[in-house]
Image (tube, rainbow, N blue to C red; front, side):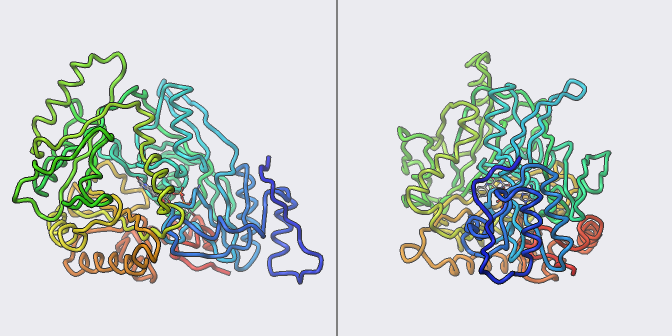
Length: 516
Ligand code: FAD
């Protein structure tokens, strides 16, 4: 079934264009409403707002068969490529295809199906489903929920599984890629394959964190757990990085069975009253006020905030919840007096960034401004020096948006997946510069921010930090080889040869060139 109101009407007077035959074959196979060569704006841009690339056509597939037909049609041409577009929340054009075919994965038929295997619950969802829809349906229909999230949920399942999918639950359950047991994938050869750890495992491991290079995820089976009802959401503030990071590491390192928060994140903020970079970003509701009197005189240009959450159910005794929270907070060395806390519904907590989105849209910094974001994984062995050089110096005035920094545990990441993470320590930190500066002339030129990102990367290289780009974006093959390291690069190339030998898929990642 094809769901779209646009029409593909080849003009009678127009000269035939290269690939008109492909477009007309596909419009016959999928229905004219599923393909457009006119209204291409959505497929030509992304959230980053830095790249604009025109595809040949935008296609709205309904089923895995539709996706496979598109890939096979592209394979019959010597040059055509295919980009699956999730929700276009990439920064550097990764979901684009210059003069290629872009698949709008959100058009796929809705699927949210509960599956029980040996009594354990899983949900089958479409690769184009938004995580926010998966959340709402799983909680309201089954009282269950996936375990590992991203902070923001208007992202697609296939889009985040192509990278990793990280939020404050990842210290316990690993990234989203570690919480999938089965995938249905359309490979670059146009074959539709169901894969798992035991069935076509090479494809399963390749696709997870695979930057869309090996196949298009049309269905994913996600691990579920009982959904809590309520969340206590807490922020505590530090002036010293050493205290912040050792407390964060203590929390994420708690053994199974020991009491612990269900969500642990952290961020850096400017030690100032600046409304988008400093103290006003801390309170969790409008009634709370940040009183700077508590900041010790020894504090530097930035402060650090641990963001924590504990899940509970209506049936839990409130004094027990208080005791668990107080017991854990009592072990931490945050600045007394700088603690913020609210209780809210579980779904509301997971959808918390939606409120920030509304605010940013109203201020013109969501749709209308570029977002030169930088995301890194930095080894624990280098994070203190990174703090000294980057947070305290280069970024001391902030990025007009969150600067996330929190620890993750390497043993929760499966090294068979395609994503690469720092290897020198069991703990590495995610660092995310989520820039929301207004567009020029109100804000700085985006090139200036891109240049600041480059400066940070240069510093990491010059100091030989053990780090990896999350959402990597490189210009040369040698940079990609350096990113993966020799061993994992050759594995990545072997996987490409096996599953997408003509390099049809995800051309916007700029890793491989189309083989004629
Ligand atoms: P797209 O940007 O559309 O696609 C990304 C890549 O995946 C492209 O190469 C595309 O071709 C490929 N792809 C898309 N769908 C499929 C599919 N079905 N099968 C195979 N390949 C596919 N990430 C986190 O880990 N944690 C966060 O907390 C987080 N928060 C974010 C908040 C915001 C506001 C934004 C803009 C991004 C955030 N991200 C986060 C990054 C996000 O994970 C990436 O942008 C990711 O690309 C998902 O976005 P998308 O679904 O729009 O995919």
